Length: 188
Image (tube, rainbow, N blue to C red; front, side, top):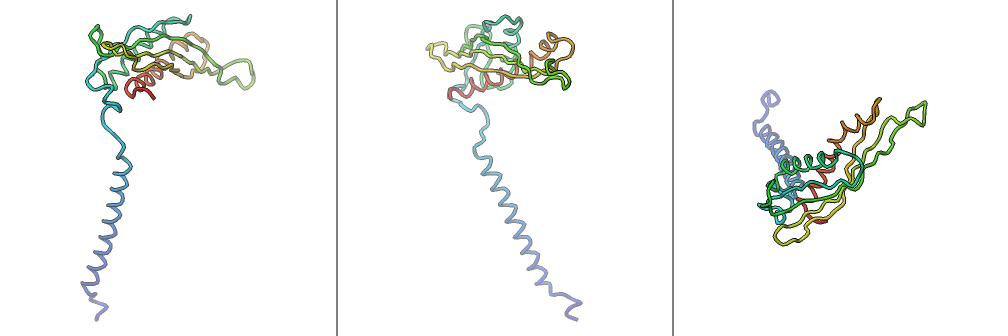
């Protein structure tokens, strides 16, 4: 008869032991997530550098023979700064920080060749190198001065200039991501 009607106290003690175990595991997971995210910060990574400041991006000088690079680079940098939101983007001469630079290099390097013909290139890596300089307008102090290189790869079809023209926005975006990080994080 004792087996037909189990003791309710034993059932509760097993349930509470399982509940305590689940609760302990849940607290360990929450604690682990909390410890893993403790270094994460919302907003700019260097608020002393970006807090409430405005920025103006001047047209970059093109020291290469490749046309169209300054336009793509300036557009990508402005879009990245707007997306990041650490600075307020300005177009007039009333900004706190002035960004200027010079495009110093544009090169294409072969990445892959046709399997049957080791001379014919199928994929290229494009590299765009530009000097980035950020100056505090009032004091003239240089905040950031760095040479950055953007990269992207292209698959060569029948027309190399068309493939490069299509890849230019991607190349400029890669460079602009690095530039925006350098501007918001400051010197390393």
